[in-house]
Amino acid sequence: MTKEEKIIVGISVGDLNGIGPEIIIKTYEDPRSLELSTPVIFASGKIMQFFKNHFKSKINFFNIDTPEKLSHGKVNVVDVWKEPVKIEFGKADNKIGEYSIKSLEAATNSLKEGTIDVLVTAPINKHNIQSDKFNFPGHTDYLAKALNGKSLMFMVSENLRIGLLTDHVPLKDASNAITEDLIIEKIATVTKSLRQDFGIRKPKVAVLAINPHAGDNGVIGNEDDTVLKPTLEKIKTTGHLVFGPYSADSFFGSNTYKNFDAIIASYHDQGLIPFKTIAFGQGVNYTAGLEKVRTSPDHGTAYEIAGKGVADESSMKQAIYTAIKIFRNRNDYNHYGKNPLKKASR
Image (cartoon, rainbow, N blue to C red; front, side):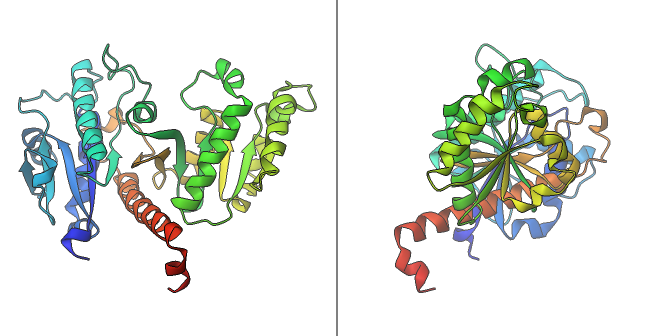
């Protein structure tokens, strides 16, 4: 692979008082990590040097003013800010939240401009990022507005993929938010992503019920009978391999999930609890449905261990590898979709 072919991975640094900087450093301490891609960290040279010293790392950073000045084979750091920042590990700090957003916005702008190929976001604190200028519940909602497309939180690992009908919505509001239009939109997004991002030609998708036991014929709610089931039947007539709704309580324990390429959960915890139980540490949060590729580790800021040097970087590594793989799959899909004879002659 030549330097020109290396995928440029932009990384937003996340909450500086959390484990984000640590798992970034640990990821790139292994020189083999530079063979597949070129990293560009959006933070500041001063702050990354602080973390290097704190964690007694031997990593070397290459400081640049803009992503265009990156150097392949090096861990590049864009100076998004120049001033020193006070770090207090494990503390939720609104000022630190401002730097999280500065990093994210700079990285997102670079992604839109094409100076980086993919974006990997380190964990943020959803509370301390809030302000008059930034009032999104998290990365997915922000990127949905900043980038073109219909965003969907898609938790993925080697053997499990779970999308959500509703994500950062209070549980009391989730069922009312699930409409025919939403179901059609989310299933279309998942199906398209499985094809173009994961190379699955005829994806099979399972949908989990809204209510316990799929409502038990209206005994425990009627949303499954009046909204979910008829919409799934409608989608099936278009040729999509969509199945359900399945009762969520036995779906994972019985290993039924292994029969499908993806599962769509009705609400956040219905999908993320089993996902993190089965794939925690190796899972990735992927924002499907956008014109650009963004991934993130499947965990949060982990304030309780921040600064102690014990954070596990596995999910961060997996987020980077997944972003690279999706980027390549999508390029192949777009290329051979336009030139089917080329694919046939391979």
